[in-house]
Image (tube, rainbow, N blue to C red):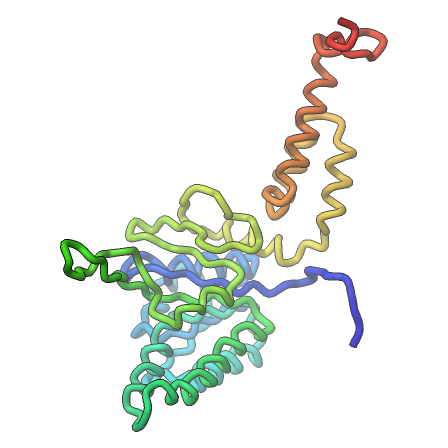
Length: 287
């Protein structure tokens, strides 16, 4: 065992796109993949379980397609990912991973015996599938269908179903495994419901394009550390220089927001002659 300092070096992003049917998950995934591959779609593979939907976007370029047929078992997905890895793919799109969960639910329902203990035969297969995604040596973009979720609320002494939003057709905790999760609405606008990169946290909804993938690629490959950016902030001599630095490293915008603001306030005071006298003492201090 040996301790080492944390380092993000040539990270491989694992992200998910979730939304209802027709919201544009497949196209959005391919646009992200195009950006992540630096427009080299020959290094992109789509593992297609959506009845050939991957071929609908061939106008984007010559990406690769691996079509899966039922049953959509975890083992079949794992084998498909390994085929893509051996072929040297930089980006793998799993379109979609809802089918594998449907398959596991169906398998569980057919098992004899106790329903609760039977999950011991299902969970290891799901874990093996998710672990294959996380350990894959390529960028992975997984799409997931969503359906309307309901909870029972008590009204006038009766329990009635109430809509509480959309829920992905996958295991409940699967979103925790991804670095970024984009929720896509029926108008094709995306919003990050989870974002460890801080590139999209707190940002308004937007339409995913190739530039989105390139921003994520920059985050994955950038050797710059937080302390490096902190030093650069301290070295800034003007507000314009500070703003340029802010735009240059989008992944550090949120974590270093307070430091950026403090430096901006200081620079604005330094260039405002009303705040300082000629000998450098503040006017308010002289008063």
